[in-house]
Amino acid sequence: MKALKGFKDIIPGEVETWQFIEQTARSIFHRFTFSEIKVPVLEKTKLFTRSIGETTDIVEKEMYTFPDRNGSSLTMRPEGTAPVLRAYIENGLHAVKPVQKLYTIGPMFRHERPQKGRLRQFHQMSVEVLGEDNPLLDAEVMAMAWQIMKELGLTASLEINSLGCKECRPDFNRALLDFLDKANGLCDDCVRRRETNPLRVLDCKSSNCQEQYVQAPSILDFLCGGCDEHFKAVKNGLDMLSVPYKVNSFMVRGLDYYTRTTFELVTSDLGAQSAVGAGGRYDGLVKQLGGPDVPGIGFAMGVERLALLLDQLGKGVHSNGIDLFIAALGPEAQKKAFVLMNVLRGKGLSVSMDLMDRSLKNQMKQAGKAEASYVLIVGEQELANGEAVLRNMETHDQHQIAIKEAVKMWHEDLATFFATETTK
Ligand code: HAM
Image 1 (tube, rainbow, N blue to C red):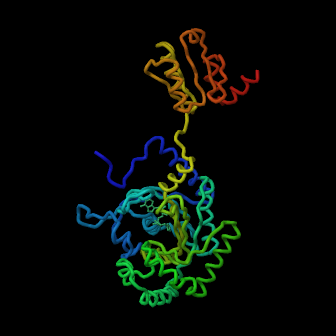
Image 2 (tube, rainbow, N blue to C red):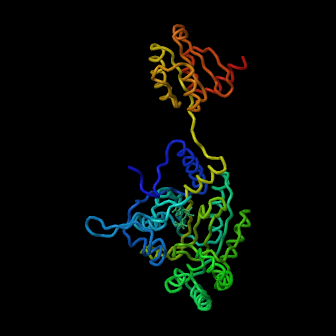
Image 3 (cartoon, rainbow, N blue to C red):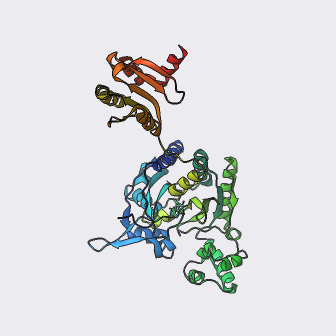
């Protein structure tokens, strides 16, 4: 049996990079005062069709949708925004705090063609801020995404755009339709999109279409006064925070709910899948889903893509290491070590040992593989005197120590113990 196409196991040796990514992000979310929210992976289909948009690729072609046993239509979440907004409304979170800053981490599902950095089950770290429309917030949210990249040791470029609002977008749509009327030999997809969702043509991958779209009108020339002011203030906010960005007026997003600010963190190191993170403002969406009329903004980063980038740069983490490996020689030593291991684990150390009577050489190898900071060698001879040899695996220093003493000291601090012993 094999896992489904586009579904992947994350095994030991890989999972440590994921933990590093998640821990880094969680620490930053905390510093930016976000709270975690956990939401189900399965929702009513109409939550997604209503929010992401009936004519988007996600809703038209990519959702894992199936009838429940009672016949109602369910969908495995293809993204995190709609479920978090549903939870915000359902739990009355707007009444708890006027501004809610939420994040969620977990799997999403899209039936796309799998390739490097593109899976059918993938993982997002997704954030939403609800209840605040100050453009400085847009800058703050992008600065947070930027900080995650920085602390992971990764670089990407931040591209930003404004998609206007329901006042000014129709003017742009008309201009775009006029332009498309004059374009030649558009691909079938674009001909269809022209009718259903004209903005989406700008995202077409066909080179013939793209060559023509260079001449397409820019949405930024059609922004109404309010949207124009907002976008200027967003850019100003990014300048204030020294977050570098590039305006890309052709950036449109694959989800229909966006208004005003949109952004993507793009890299050229992932082949065709250039976005490691993306998001934007979606004022009006909470109301559309049956909640209060509050503005919102958020983004999501793809964990698989971040992990790929780290691995490509040799910055992946493949082991978390352990504090201590106890190498026991002989049956009596093994029994003593077995009990000691349990005591030390109870005191907070990560400890391992071999239970297969292997040679000292072999056990030292195991300690190396486990990336143990220290090895305690317990031989029958030493044991008779209540002693053992403690070895620092980094410096290779070793000391004869009383087991009783050591048990007390390790709890305090193995490193301090070593420091004082070596300076003696
Ligand atoms: P999205 O652009 O569809 O936005 O996805 C965000 C990120 O998820 C992408 O930049 C990428 O890193 C990752 N991603 C998307 N699809 C895949 C896939 N098939 N395989 C691997 N990684 C993938 C959203 O989902 C919005 N909900 C973001 C948002 C939150 N906007 C406002 N709040």
